[in-house]
Length: 92
Image (cartoon, rainbow, N blue to C red):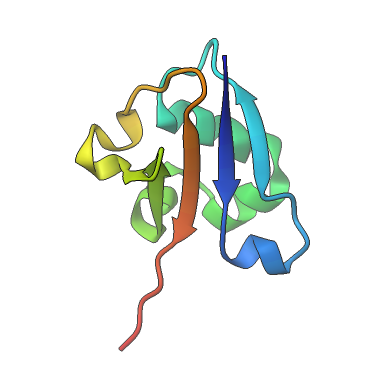
């Protein structure tokens, strides 16, 4: 089973890979897939550092719906799901 994960924002302008296709046989939750990508990619790990950073600084969409409407990063995934990770922009 495969899902598509896309990262938007600063990565796009840095020429870094922003789209991944992830096998979810062993990773059943959003958290597991994102954690796997962070461990495998130095640039992603540098930007996000850990799941707390992902939760605080991004909006994660599962099939175009905010995962906080479900179980947050513990939301279970199914074959063909699409994740989109968007940076939150704060201003004052």
